[in-house]
Length: 160
Image (cartoon, rainbow, N blue to C red; front, side, top):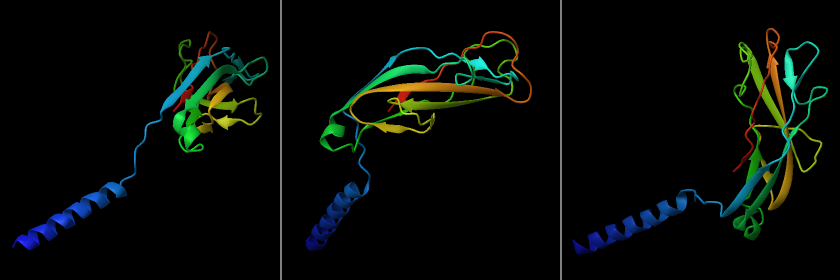
């Protein structure tokens, strides 16, 4: 009887050890990612007044500086670096009555002066160091046009 118990104990110990190796390891990023807000963007309307956006004539992109520093990123050669994204908001921060009705929002961003627009919800890895980001927001009203008034939209830049 004693021999059977020892065999069962060894089997259970082996299964427990195997279970530990089968689960993906969760690691925390050891480091920081700091976002310093720069210039605010300006949204302008298109001639049909159904689009407000920072890429319209007279508009301007918002800007920020991101400084990423991850010890694991340095040691493990980019294995565990930060990703940057700028997802679109679901509504204006402020708008006149009816200004938020039937509106869809979209964002794009560019890292480090690149001319390539990246969709706002598509995280982009950044290596350690300082990076610039330019963000554009577009609001499209369909059907109809935007009522006259002041509009404000806020895009949250994420570094995760």
